[in-house]
Length: 116
Image (cartoon, rainbow, N blue to C red; front, side, top):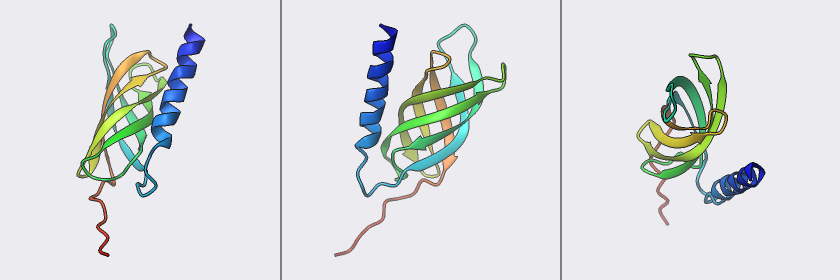
């Protein structure tokens, strides 16, 4: 059962990230994360790759987080929303088996307008 869940999760993540429109460049954000839903919440520093770097866009996100309390590293995948200069994401940390909220800053900008 666990093996099937991992395959389904990996397939879903691949499909989400592979359906990015060709004109959208990936975005990268660096910020802080907070894992919740367990006995001991975790605070960490994170970096995430987003499916788009355009302003006001719903994006797929995948990232790696370093946690201060136990010096562990987690990896996650989920969804986010971009704003001017950063993004907020809600994802699932597969290593610690808990939901994660992250707020990061990066090069997020308005989409280019092409005049024809």
